[in-house]
Length: 404
Image (cartoon, rainbow, N blue to C red; front, side, top):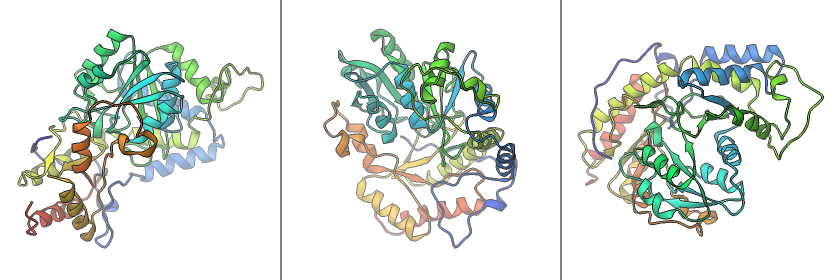
């Protein structure tokens, strides 16, 4: 992470006036956009009366596929990103006795999705620039039980070592599961994240760039995978999905495998489709806010930021790095006193009781970042005065004689 300033850009599309934070309210870390388009889509789906997995689910999946602009990529919507990751691991035939190499520095949902299969996670360090999986460290951890590598794209910033991870996977015959929970809409030289690769999983949870309230998706290029995923997400039933896509049901079916209750219903799917129509606007205005933060915080060399100009990033969170853990706690306390919430993304999984005995390599970057990183508020359609409040609170801390 280095200090990088960018140019501010105008808010795309609509104004933020109607959804500004009241001066007496705390500025939250997250705030989903739930405007009139979302309410209209929800009402229409409710009035249609088919509430479960249905035609609106398929419409949302088509929308994801179209948005990614990837040739021959298929989207299967799920009830959460955790379940998307879980089903991806099941699809890859990961189970008891297997190992999956994962970054310790990611949300524990990814680790839980892997261990839900009966596999063991092996905790790997991250590289310092993008906070993505360090491919060189992952290479050191590959053993006879390794079946897959899981990488994640932090904050929407593509993992720098993605190509190296895929090369490593090819060398050892491993699957790659991309945890792209933060990265819907971000791009690389190969196009959108999810437009290529092995198995990519997105999150559309309550605080993500676009939301289905709760939800996720698995992206694959193998058409045969789609049928397996349909069965896995709908309790193993082999022939009901296509009927439900027509808002009907079939009463003659087989159960072909162990399955789960992991599908996405019509109401959240309708919300997701409405959000998809606004996704490019969400991305544009979030990029402008991140650049505005960068420009404002460039005066504070103690406060490091992700090394990006945001041009290819669909920002999910905006993070800064403090000099040490004490400085972070002091900054967070000061922000709280000024009515600005903040967060921590992430704590290392190796510190949790459940994963303390997991096999792992050296984790110096994970430990360094976990002690110092702070998440500041970032929403779609933030009002100028809300951004000014956040910037003013941070400036107030560094100008308060804190000594940092």
